[in-house]
Image 1 (cartoon, rainbow, N blue to C red):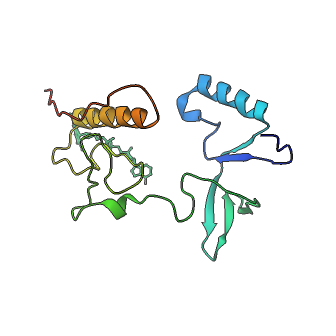
Image 2: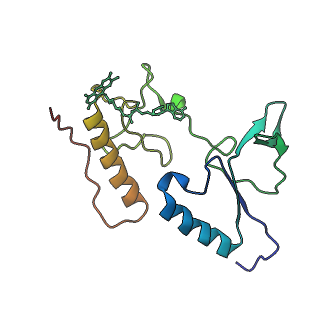
Image 3: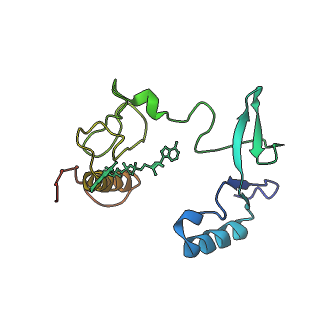
Length: 153
Ligand SMILES: Cc1cc2nc3c(=O)[nH]c(=O)nc-3n(C[C@H](O)[C@H](O)[C@H](O)COP(=O)(O)OP(=O)(O)OC[C@H]3O[C@@H](n4cnc5c(N)ncnc54)[C@H](O)[C@@H]3O)c2cc1C
């Protein structure tokens, strides 16, 4: 965007950015980051200093994260807590597309949700419904199908 004086660094506990997705993804995203001048520091995670919530610490090593702006999946005050949405029995309510009501863009599937039967096959079907709903939300051209439980022996 023409801001050559901005340094962006990604901190991730993974061994490589997108490491979970395998070598092909790691190489591809590594190339993109390098091309964009984005640095990546792996094997670290960021936490708030319990004594001073304004300070962010990089673990291991307890270095201070010195940055003007910090964006994170668990950014302070904005992280979604499953516990906050859970029903009285501790399960997360969802609609038939896996979407958690009254929370902005959060989906859930599997044993954690309030569906009364806990089973691996059903958990996968819930995840499929949630994936289609997420894809549609992200702009994919598809009509997301609702979860329709089918028990297979
Ligand atoms: C003994 C037993 C036998 C079963 N047999 C069958 C069977 O034969 N067929 C069948 O279909 N189903 C079976 N099930 C049910 C099936 O295992 C579950 O329905 C299914 O695994 C649910 O998938 P899930 O992804 O929702 O949860 P899980 O498979 O439980 O996955 C949740 C994951 O989240 C991780 N996790 C938890 N907390 C955190 C955290 N704070 N941070 C990061 N990670 C976290 C856990 O380590 C775990 O890996 C069986 C269950 C049990 C207990």
